[in-house]
View 1 (cartoon, helix red, strand yellow):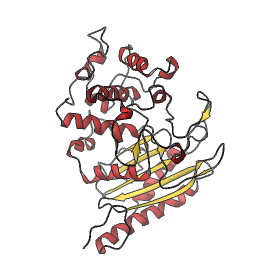
View 2: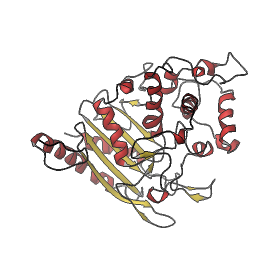
View 3: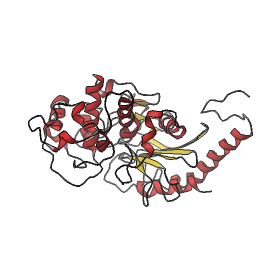
View 4: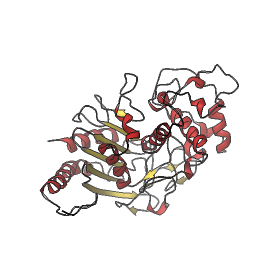
Length: 351
């Protein structure tokens, strides 16, 4: 029997045909839910599923851009992935550095950033480890409007490193991943935007092939092909927490690699850390999470502010991604994305 590429839907034997039909049937079950949101509340959406054998199904609805002029959405459209940057780029990049022996997960960040809080050698930030930052188990805040302090990337990086961050309980924090991004730049000697990315994922998309995000009041324009996150923009367009763009197939390819365990260096992303529903980078399944109530124990996923998300159910051998531009033309509207994500997940996993 000849081999079949992962995006092929040809008949290649009963087992493969069954898998193809499974993802198609699961996709079809979720499509009526999308129709209730697109385009009335969300301009456009792409939903894709992939099984462990590589078979996949994708559906496209709505528009890539609504204002100032309409633009069509396609399977090949790049979406601003927002915080999916954390799990599709930064987390694997850090874990590859660990696998190469350049750092240890429980090493302090100062192993890569010796000048972190360099004017106070007893500062708490100097004791933060790579594992803690990956699992959001630090005292750092969720977010800070760093872009309001200026737009010089080098100065903002220095500001992040030297700021006295006020202590607080562990929360999901962009600052954790900004620090991890700076660590990667130090370890590799290259800015994040110059580092390699797999096909279908990039820090430098063609704007004409992108879904639009917000009509940004700060930048004075509709954003298309430039990062939506203000802090990532001020840091040069690529940061450890945001800046990555991707197509549905680029995201599904990354999820498929994790689903099949293709890269042993990434095995740790399945294991909860510090007794929380956080793994290394990812969110583990728990009641009320965006991955719905029907997922198997041990599933993982992550969302992005712009309206993106990807989830992996290892027990079912299935992954799915929902990419939307729900912040277009404004974030200040009730898109219903939280309810949509959960409903789509439960529909995809039914049966």
